[in-house]
Image (cartoon, rainbow, N blue to C red; front, top):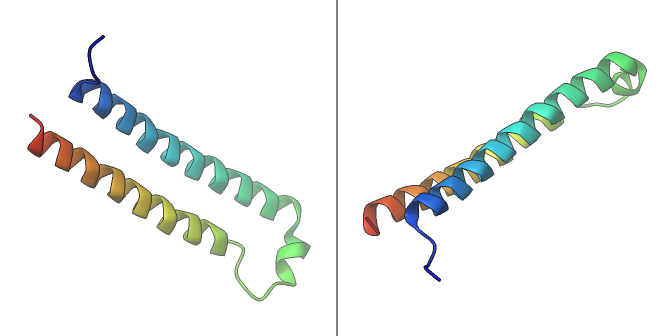
Length: 79
């Protein structure tokens, strides 16, 4: 049995990036829908309704940056 190839590893890393982007988009849609359904809940909080979206955006960007750095390292040093 052969080892994992660079192409397979890149495919997995691309799937990880796509999954995090998809989860972020889904979370944004859910958050906006919840805001439209329950505006009174968000009116009593001190933070704007989109605060959690900003937090998840930062987390998503950091994770994608880490995965891209791993991809760059793999492609540069193992080809």
